[in-house]
Length: 356
Image (cartoon, rainbow, N blue to C red; front, top):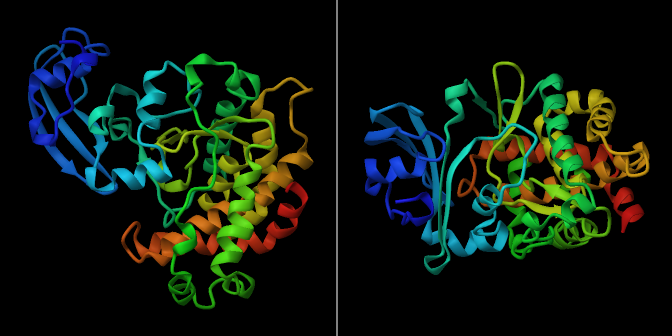
């Protein structure tokens, strides 16, 4: 049986050695899996598990990471992320010139609204997954910025729109629901740890006048391929300092500024961001490696970067308002505090006025 003919198991315990052998066959020809064991499961919006493998013939990875739809959250994922974006990305043949987990199988069953991905367990390369409570150093953030620039430069403008393998990629547009977040909960949790200007924002101010307006601007400039959700919780750092990116479910097309600002403003402490952001934006611009006539000016990058705080602030204020349903409170707080400080430091309102 070929990988394309594999059915999608409904539970991790249903993955048999023969099934896994077929799933890995293209990348590890001749290897035969003798035993599959669920080493760890972490079911949330999606079903996720680390699977431990033994081999009866040949060799392959000792562990793999599996990701599939949780039927209870399929509607939410489709609304906010796109149900099949990540498996489509890794089955379409597009080159992603930055570090990411190697994908061994990306299967989609649209009739059942399901997908399954079997991919590299980056822990086998010594990867250190990060989150907002463990911010990056400036040097690590620079590595992440350069990776995003390589991705953006590879698919800048017509390099994306003219690529038939990526003609399914949707524009980044505002999704519904944020405006219903009980923002007062976030305000109570933040207390006096963020500027008063942020606490004074109503739901309409933040989610409509600021966030939706910024998102609407993303399709009015030269598009590129966006990771779409490159906050620090979707990254890892390798022993040599390389930064890799996980969770490509929100891949979209639109302005570079969303990826750049969302990553950088949330990955550094406020002090490090203030000290290093101009240099890091120069690192980004240099790593785009675009012809001079296509290269955005430093001023354009700075303006887009300033406006992009709208996204990070809205997403994490909404997430913080949801209690612990989506992320731990300490993770949400750290993000909300960083984006709130950046919102004031960078005068995001003025930047939005300039680009919209």
